[in-house]
Length: 81
Image 1 (cartoon, rainbow, N blue to C red):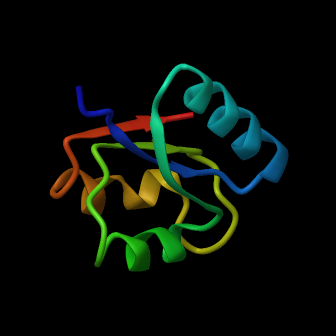
Image 2: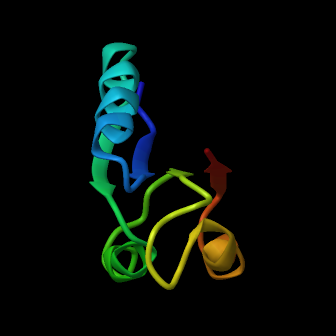
Protein backbone atom coordinates (compact mmCIF):
# COMPACT_ATOMS: atom_id res chain seq x y z
CA UNK A 1 0.00 0.00 0.00
CA UNK A 2 1.35 3.40 -0.98
CA UNK A 3 1.41 6.01 1.78
CA UNK A 4 0.15 9.52 1.25
CA UNK A 5 2.73 12.24 0.62
CA UNK A 6 2.19 15.07 3.11
CA UNK A 7 3.60 18.59 3.10
CA UNK A 8 3.62 20.48 6.41
CA UNK A 9 3.51 24.28 6.26
CA UNK A 10 4.10 25.65 9.76
CA UNK A 11 6.30 28.53 10.90
CA UNK A 12 6.72 27.24 14.48
CA UNK A 13 9.56 24.71 14.31
CA UNK A 14 8.52 22.88 17.48
CA UNK A 15 4.94 22.40 16.25
CA UNK A 16 6.09 21.34 12.77
CA UNK A 17 8.49 18.76 14.22
CA UNK A 18 5.80 17.42 16.56
CA UNK A 19 3.32 16.99 13.69
CA UNK A 20 5.98 15.36 11.54
CA UNK A 21 7.02 12.88 14.23
CA UNK A 22 3.45 11.89 15.03
CA UNK A 23 2.56 11.31 11.38
CA UNK A 24 5.74 9.36 10.65
CA UNK A 25 5.10 7.19 13.71
CA UNK A 26 1.85 5.97 12.16
CA UNK A 27 3.43 5.42 8.75
CA UNK A 28 2.89 8.58 6.72
CA UNK A 29 5.55 10.01 4.41
CA UNK A 30 6.38 13.66 5.09
CA UNK A 31 7.69 15.23 1.89
CA UNK A 32 8.98 18.36 3.60
CA UNK A 33 8.29 20.99 6.23
CA UNK A 34 8.11 24.60 5.02
CA UNK A 35 7.78 27.75 7.11
CA UNK A 36 6.35 30.38 4.74
CA UNK A 37 3.64 30.83 2.16
CA UNK A 38 6.07 32.12 -0.44
CA UNK A 39 8.35 29.09 -0.04
CA UNK A 40 5.31 26.80 -0.30
CA UNK A 41 4.31 28.17 -3.70
CA UNK A 42 7.89 27.76 -4.95
CA UNK A 43 8.07 24.21 -3.60
CA UNK A 44 4.81 23.24 -5.31
CA UNK A 45 6.17 24.21 -8.72
CA UNK A 46 8.13 20.92 -8.69
CA UNK A 47 6.29 18.73 -6.17
CA UNK A 48 2.79 17.34 -5.84
CA UNK A 49 1.81 16.29 -2.30
CA UNK A 50 -1.40 14.40 -1.66
CA UNK A 51 -2.15 16.49 1.41
CA UNK A 52 -1.00 19.85 2.76
CA UNK A 53 -1.28 20.60 6.48
CA UNK A 54 -1.03 24.37 6.69
CA UNK A 55 -0.97 26.85 9.55
CA UNK A 56 -3.55 29.48 8.67
CA UNK A 57 -1.58 32.24 10.46
CA UNK A 58 1.84 32.02 8.83
CA UNK A 59 4.29 34.86 9.10
CA UNK A 60 5.10 36.75 5.91
CA UNK A 61 3.01 38.23 3.12
CA UNK A 62 1.18 35.02 2.20
CA UNK A 63 -0.52 33.42 5.18
CA UNK A 64 -2.56 30.24 4.93
CA UNK A 65 -5.85 31.95 4.18
CA UNK A 66 -4.37 33.96 1.29
CA UNK A 67 -2.91 30.86 -0.30
CA UNK A 68 -6.13 28.92 -0.11
CA UNK A 69 -7.48 29.92 -3.53
CA UNK A 70 -4.20 29.26 -5.30
CA UNK A 71 -3.66 25.89 -3.71
CA UNK A 72 -7.17 24.52 -4.03
CA UNK A 73 -6.80 24.54 -7.80
CA UNK A 74 -3.92 22.05 -7.70
CA UNK A 75 -4.17 20.03 -4.49
CA UNK A 76 -6.66 17.31 -3.61
CA UNK A 77 -6.65 17.94 0.14
CA UNK A 78 -5.71 21.05 2.10
CA UNK A 79 -6.21 21.16 5.87
CA UNK A 80 -5.65 24.27 7.93
CA UNK A 81 -4.16 24.03 11.42
